Length: 605
Image (cartoon, rainbow, N blue to C red):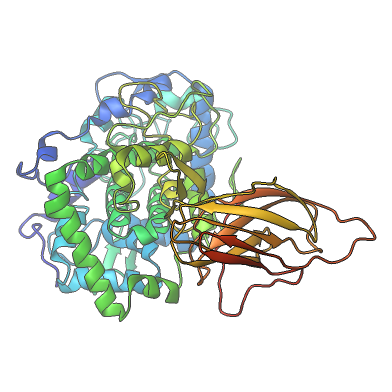
């Protein structure tokens, strides 16, 4: 069984500390980042644009932006009302924290579903059997050195915004089982929001937001624990009903665990991050948080893990050994390389609303890496209208580039920063702090950045070629020295530099991938030659890629070409030859096809 520092601590103490957003126990200062934690109140102060609390931590205040807070309400009610039964159960699992007897689990277990069906099971097994002590001490959401690195207690008290399920009606009847002394609607309510809710389709006549409580259940699946575990959203607990809604403490821990795991297993980072976003979204499913709370929790997690990865001592003594431990364990248990294990398993999937599209959004269905990255990006803004300045330059926070150290270890800090700048979302969405000393954590799209193909030019400039695939760095350059326009059925001259010396590379024409020839690279890494564009190629924009013999690695930034239609009486194209360095290039003619056994990666072009 896994070992934890929670032994001897009461269940009540665990519950109270965690739901109000404070780590269970402060870690002794051992590493520089232990005493330089991010100031969450400062990072999250974009919220002041929408709401100003009384400063008394009493859940009352002034609405500054009725439209944005109305959208916040509408989306919350819709998500709560439309989540599937399966998603409600997952939401209860994501609400769980481990207990004093070490028989439950926490979000550092549930977000591991992003590893895929096989690797997630191995991860949970290793944690429960005590075979991953370094990982457990790092990622645990109750007292892990990264999983519980920052708490949201001060921020919640500062912003003091009432939770969605709290009544605006001060005379409302408290549901049976609630803490009558602590959760009495006469004092614990959302009355400051009544005027902004009355008359809305997502609220009743008295302005109470339409929220359905998800009943407690017992988890008998043993998916994350060998024990039966009682799951309860805790609506009637003091720590929940009186604790401020913004930011979400559970989402903060979900992202601390999720980003930690994504940096330990960068090969699956986009899926793990999407699962962390699901955990945050599940707080809305339960009706205990709003989208803005979830966006704030993501900011917390990003800043927290950036601080940890930016601490050289912590990185080398804690993060990197845990990564080695986890990789070694997974490969030993799986019986192959991590890449082989990933290829053989079923990836993370999700369908939170049974195929129903959110207002102003999508169904948020996840089936593969590309859809995982897409859903992650949608949940970065939840479709809110822009409330800040649009069109601002990228604003990557200091230290954020270190979140990509394990994904792109060969890139420089400046190059990793460039990747984040090129993959971040536009400025102006809620909570954006572009141009401030903090930079904009809100704009960081880590799912896109960790799934990017990055081309590095001879001068060191890093350019993101595409996202949504395998993270890779390419250094080759492919050009068309005689022009990028070619008639279907005719040859096009090519030249490549920065290529693997002595290799024979396939030239692939897309959109529908077809091998149209090869280039043989000389000892100096250059190649010249020509290939023939098939006669049947559709006129319009296409790209040419160079891939290795397996078809698994794209080696250059795709070359954009324009194919023009052949004359009606035109004949068929033929192959051609050329020389490059000490090698040759052979065109494939108009009937070129992908060789058997070669699997071409899909790259946008």
